[in-house]
Length: 594
Image (cartoon, rainbow, N blue to C red; front, side, top):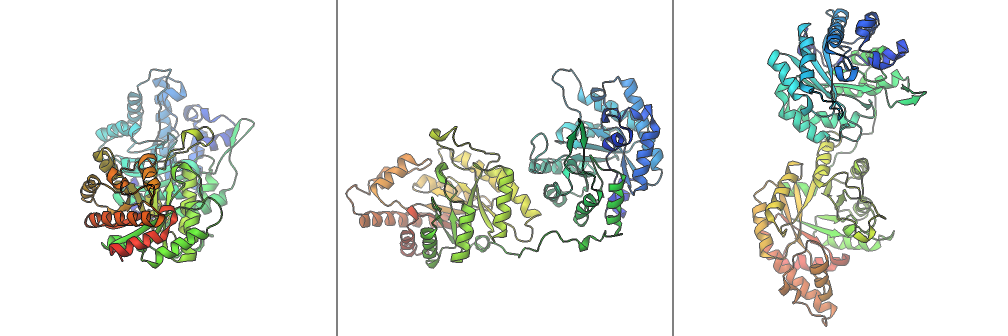
């Protein structure tokens, strides 16, 4: 039976478990000897294969994961014996009960050794082919590019070969070499015709890799017809007396691994720390025996479906209004709540809450947004910046935001920490805005599939080099952005850039930031990064103006800017000066926006 026939005829099948760690458990020998036992004591390896098949495994891997001359420190003569014997032992144990995958581990360059990796792969592949291998698995990979030449070589030798590429993706969503799973999945989609199946193995236990696995597989499932496999570890290991040990909890492993069954996974097996008992129990779940009815397992309460009304209006080409408020420096939310109530009363569609602008700490924007949403009853758009949070923190915040009913996020990289604070305050920048957008997009496909988060971004039409800003905009669109809020627009050149930007598949809210005094106008022009304000607008104010007169000048300027903007944007984005919502209300009324 071929792999395709097996997967086509069954929704999910069991695969085998770990070879190396189970070998060590049985023999007491170091796992470094595991592959050499193919020729030293082949009966041990044969026994392991047979135990996995007896436990229900319909897919098994040859004992050749580390079978290359670099890792085993051996010549090609001995290596050929190890590989050939490894394949024969698996094939003899499998008979017609299981599909045998010729297992090829990743080979990495060594800085101190001159070594031709592709030639080594060719030698290994030729050994397998000479034994009749037609199904291959490259496992524990960190990237696809490293093995593409070897995959191409197999296709050249055997056009109809079946090839699985299995990757190690850590719970943080990156491979061990730091490749984000978004980039990896895109790479797989580009090379889908070279593969039969894509898998995940190692990296963590079934519960630990559950979410990244579903996110990773979702993009692949939507864009290819590749089969999917999953082989988690028994859990996180511990080191005792120099030995790597895993908690012996096969029942828990099987229960957690069974969660993958409803998600279109073709084969579920195990990696480090798993034994035939683990596979026997997951086989029962797959076959629906003895508590294996996954429909009975409840892992989370159902989240009420909810979608962003603001986003829906944008997609229906309705003109929208967003207004930004700054969160407080302390715990008193009275002023921001009152400002939000005023903005709601004059027809604002959504309140945006900034995220510690200029790197100065303020109340968390998601917490602040949730409070506004509950107490004012208006949709909210918290800014979420990458400066202060690693990918784990960003994920945690997104889970919390979604649970609070927040369905729109403005993903931004974040202002840099002031030079005077460097060394005291340390920026993170684990991601940038586009990678954060990709992360939210992946979570939308799986975790938030029923009620996704609308993804917004920032766009600067007054950038010194508009072509770079437009290119960056296209990158954000490709990463999932559906709308952008622009930096404040004060010049005709910025409006020309907006005209060009609007040719892209993106909704644009033009930024309007009212100036309220001579001092405020000068500060914005000279001290706020990215502001391009013509001198004549600053001269509209004078130092001796009253507060009322200055406010009137600022309102009139804002109304004129809106008149210029309206035909080239899908909405207006107000940056509320000092949270003085009454000014925004007057501008909305005078400009006829509501």
